[in-house]
Each structure stands twice: as C-alpha cells, then as structure tokens.
Length: 256
Length: 256
DNA sequence: GAGTGGATTTCGCAT
DNA sequence: ATGCGAAGTCCACTC
Image (tube, rainbow over all chains, first blue to last red; front, side, top):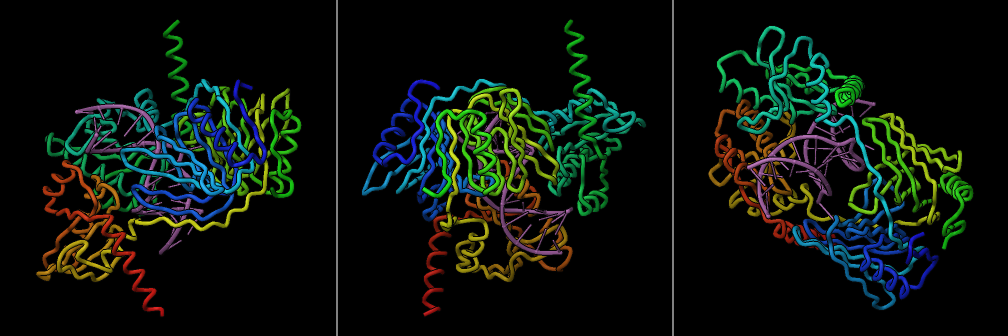
C-alpha cells in the first residue's frame, strides 16, 4: 500500500481528527465508519439525527454521507469544497463548505468504528456505451435503424426554442424532425418536439413530419402525440450497439 | 462495536471473499478499498479499467463503486439486488444482479487494501426543509407570499395534461393558475404552464392568468413567458421557511 | 458565469 | 407494475 496509508479500528476521536486533517491536506481519500449526526444548510436545509454511517472524503473534496441503506447519499457536498476539522466536547466535527451555491455540511462524530485514509491511484479508463448521442450516431451511420429510406441532413440544428436532435428527408421526400430519447419518451419530450416542428413549419413552406425516436413510449404519451399530429418510431438499443460496433470496425479498417 | 464486525488491513482475497459472503448473508454493510476493474451491463454497458476504488455494499443490497474523485459513483446498483462472490485465478469477483430492469454489475479485485464489514444501526430521523410542496404549503398558509390578495381554491388539481400545482383567484377575481418551481424555472416549466392554462381556458369561459412562482428565472425564460402571455412572480424561499415555522407553531398551539 | 439538456439518473407517489 | 414529476439532483457543454 502507498506511503502514509492508515487502516484503523476504533481510533480515538483525537487521532481520527489528526489522520483526517493530514489526509485532507495531502489530498488522500478518507473513509470513516462511525456514529454521527449531520446538518446541512444551503439551497435547502436538513438535519440527520445520530446513527451509524459511512462518510467518504475524496481527494478532490467531494464528500458523501451514506446511511446503511439506499443508493443515494443522505447528505453530500460535490467536489471542490473546503474543510475544517475540530474536536469539541468529545465530538469530532467535520465541516465541508462550498461557495456557489453557498452551502455547508457539518458532520458530528461521537464514535469512529473504522477509519481508512490512503492515497488512491486510479487512471483506469471508463467507457460507457449507448448514450443518446450514440443513438444518433447509429442512426447517422445506418438510417434504417430509424426508418427505411430516411436520409439525414443535419443534427443538433439550432432552431428557435433549442436544438433539433436530428432532421432529414423520408423516402417520399418530406422533411422529418426527429427527437431522440434514449429511454422511455415522456410528456416533456413530446412538448419539445411539438414546439420544434411548429418552429420548422414556420420557417419552411413544405410538409414537416415530427417523429419521436425512442426504445419505449407510454400509452398516455402515445395519445398526446396523436393529438398533436406527431409520430412515434421505436428504435432498438441493441441494434444501435451493433451498428456502432460495426461502424467502429469500419473506422479501424479505414485507419489501416 | 457490534458482534461480527471486521476491520481488516490488506486481507487476502480468500479471506476477503469469506468475510464479504458472510456479511451479505447477514445483511451487514461492507466497505472495500482496493484495486479492481468493473463491468456493467443493462440499460447501457460500461467497462472500467483497473484502478483503486472504494466499493460499498449496503444491507439492502445497494452497491456503489467510487473512484477517488467526484461526487457520483462510477458504477452502481440500486437496492434490492442479489450477489455472488467467487475467487477465480487470483481474482475476487463480486457480481450484483437485479431484475427489472435486468442489470448486472461485476467487480474484479486483484488486491484489497482495506475491508470493513459491520452491522450498522441507523434509526436517526432525517428532515429536509423547503421542498416544492413546502413552498405550496407556505403559499396556502400565507397567500401574500405569492401575491397580495390571492385566494387559493385548490392544489394538485387534475386537468387534461397533468396536475395544476395551485390555482385560485386574484384580488380582482380573475382565475390564476400557478406553477411552482423550487429552483430556477426553466423552459419546460413554461411549456407545462402554457399547456395547463390552455387546458383551463378551454374548460371555463373567463379570463385566466398563468403565473410561474419560483425564486429565480432566466432572461430567456422571461422572454418565452412574455411571448406566451404568461407571468412570473418571485417567491422568497427564506420567507417560505419562516411562514412554515410560524404555521407549525400555530399547529402546536392549536394542539394544546 | 449563466443557460440547457442528459442521466444506467434515483426516488416517491398515485393510478 | 406503470406513469409522472421532483431533486440540495450532478454533470458536461455551450455561449
């Protein structure tokens, strides 16, 4: 393990404070398991009564307070905040503050069960596949993923209320405005598309189709679409992934 | 510390596997710090090359993989998933699976720097103040927080496209549809409000005002509001908090 | 620095 | 189970 690492069982509050202070100063990561209460004040306010939690302080200052259940931290502070640690009346106090928005998080420990402080080295690359932009890439590379005979013209085209995800011509030469959603399309996606189509109709004097491209849609949204004279086209994510993989293969072939 | 707790420095992969398996079986929390690579497959797909990370397994099955920087976990699994741990070729493999949506997370450790496993007791109550519904409560308790002379009629009223946050009569007897936003109001809030107002106008044959109530608004959204003949009313969150506190005091007085 | 939209969003509540 | 909107959302990207 790296220099200056600490794995402590039931450290005193005093030595915990010392270790935490040093770790923060040297931008090491800290993991604390212990009994604490928490106060937050900023965009909102919260109090958390005493209990056993896991507190993580990362090297960039991001801070998390996790209860023993649930995916989300109960309290937190994003990266880039400043710390103060102190020991008052048999309580270890950790304060994390950030400006913009002005927010403070205060953690009061009366017991530390475990304390890990170490420099962590992590240069591993992270790849995530099939995002909304990758859906668009797949449609551009293989337009029939979206619709037979579709010919893309442009993407992220600026219009009045925002950007068109994608637009082009269909097999019969009509203009098509496509709104892409990687997950189930909701009401707001429809309202967005409706506004975009209106905007395009005001610009060009020809027929314009508005199509929502998504892997799923709800019944209510389906109805709303019909009301507004818009369409839905199912897009298969697996198919997108395949197309992207093939396209990547082609790119590599092109390279050699 | 509770029965069966473990705080281990540089445990072998074999003993790590044993401790993790037991902890999961007994619904204890596990914190692992070590070198690993991660694969995720489900709604999307991701791979994370080897590096040092913090892995948390909670008693309800929620699982988090944290890199040494950033607020968000790089990989995760929400609560309610199932685990399998194994030791293959000098690698400790942790698999967390959930159905609906079908997703799997696989973590491959080649080194464990620290391992904490313990039953955590946390019954502490959590209170968060000044949510959107609390803004509404404040306006209901003290309508001038929103507008002088406003008389609320109902809240969460069902109309065609969804629910009206709040509606009532203004000082001159006109119907007012209020859309409440706790944070800066965005474009989608305006589109929502516009649709609601349209819907109400189609129902009643009288003048209807549409008002966005929020602590902040952007210039562009202000313009869009004007275009659609809607209004903005600033609401102070601190004022809401005060009103709520007073209202609570009154409630307590009523009780005695 | 504000503005905009996506996210493996998660979570909660209502149908 | 599905649908729908809030969130201390965070984050990345543009202007």
